[in-house]
Image (cartoon, rainbow, N blue to C red; front, side):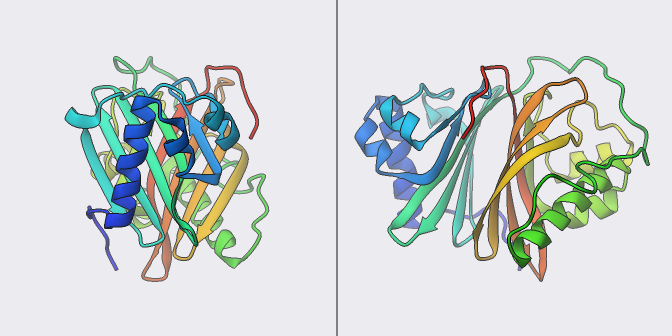
Length: 264
C-alpha cells in the first residue's frame, strides 16, 4: 500500500494546531498536555530537552509563524508527521496515537547551511562501512525492531556503496532528507542521483552511538545519536512504515549538535 501526501485526521490536525499556537504564544500548560511521556525537543543547535524540561520552560520556536511556511503532512494511522519549511529553517513534528489520544513524541528543528558545504573527502563507492552499514550498537527488543534495524543498515550500506536502486527500494516515495550539513533538503529522486554518482557530500552515513525505537504497529519512530569522522555529533530522527511486507524510511532529519550535550 502506497501512502503519499495526506491530510491529517481531524484529531491529530487539531492537536498539532493547538500545540503550534501554544508554543508560539507561550501557553505552557496547553502545550504540556499534548506531550508524550517520551517526548524530546531538539532545537537548531542540537540541544535536546525532555518533556519535564520543556514543561518547565517552553523553548522559542525557530519558525515562529508557519503562516507562510511550506507544510507537508503524512498520516500513517498510528503515527502522523508534520514538516514545516521556510527558507533555511525546517521543523519536524512526529505525533503518535496513544490510548489517551494523540501525543507529540518528537519536535525537531534543523537549519540548513547558507551556502554549499565545504568540500570534504567522500569515501568512494564500496568503501568499508562497518557502522552503520553492518553492526550497530543497538540490540533489537523484538522481531519488528530487528526488521527495522536490518532495513536501516541496508539503506546505509546502499548509500555508501553507490547502489541507488537498492537504496530506492528502502526509501519511501515521500522521503525527505534534511540536514544541518547541507544547504538544501533532498527528496527521493535527487538523493538517488547523488548516490548513483557517489556524491554524498556532507550528508552521508555516520557512525551510530545509540538509538531508541518506538513501535506503533506498522510504523516505527527511531531517534539516534551519531558521530561523523570529523568528530561532529548529530541527532537524527527517522520514521519507518511497513508497506507490502517491507519497511521503508519516510524521513531523516539530522541536526548537528553545537550546543552543550544533554542526555535523555
